[in-house]
Amino acid sequence: MTPAAAGSGSAVPVGRAVHVKVPATTANLGPGFDTLGLALSLYNELDVEVLPTHGLEIAVEGIGAEDVPTDTSNLVVRSLAHAFAWAGVELPGLRLTARDAIPHGRGMGSSGAAIVAGIMAAKGLLDGIVEIDASRALALATELEGHPDNVAPALFGSLTIAWMTPDGPQHKRLMVHRGVSPLVAVPAGTMSTALARSLQPQSVPHEDAIFNVSRSALLIAALIQSPELLLAATEDKLHQSYRAGAMPETDRLIRLLREHGLAAVVSGAGPSILVLGSDPAQRLRAADLIEEHAETPWESLLLAVDFRGATVVPHSTHAAA
Image (cartoon, rainbow, N blue to C red; front, top):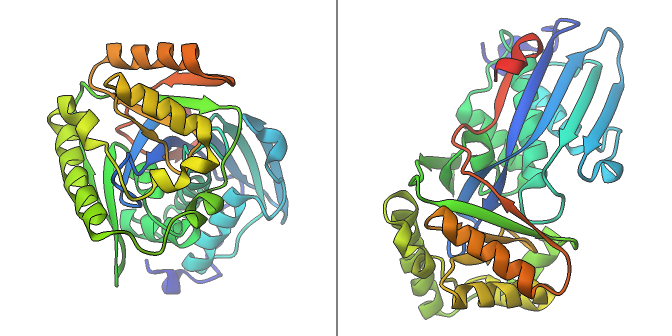
């Protein structure tokens, strides 16, 4: 059924409930600015139930819960409403319970995860009324996020290449070599994505663009086939150096890690650090170096690549997901 055919008369049954699980993501991966993203095994979870009356009941638990709004400005709610508006179905009264594990403002895709959680919740609630397929979910999420590099891996898992076309955002999902071992080092401080983007120049030298094209191509090969090439493949000249002054300790630690042969880059907009180890021992070395040389508190998260992406299931069976 198309959204136009569904219309506002197709009400969602009272009591329908779904459980959503969305992975953290890390974007750019060094040279793949606004194009490459990787899903990680750290998750936000969301339960949504349709109420018999209008209005919202929102409870948020976990990391950063005290800073998350519990009204219509909540990003999950805005995303849900966006999907329902596209579907032409009136947004019912809802009870939302969110359990967040993804740090906010640290370059781990927290806003993308919130947007994807709302889209997936809408997909589950609208089951049998309006279909939200994979391409539509990506389009709706990108409309809110502004770019697809975080929402694509959050939706589909693994490594994603995302790009824009006149017909909307597109993506390609690739399987990651089993030897790739991610670590994300998370500092106490945050970084605004808007601020990070404002530090980018409007144009870059031709040779820098060529440099990043070559490294981005090499990075795909390193991630899916040849992890031993990760150090060379994660070199970048398009964005990290321009943002370094806004997060000096991040920059200093990345330089240190790379001097020790470790493929360290800024995670997303920062200030977290992503280390792509070619084996588990490399990321343990990275964690030790950060602990030894950091001047402020950092938490090293030893994560796996998430291969499943976002999921939504009826609430009564979510434990099996």
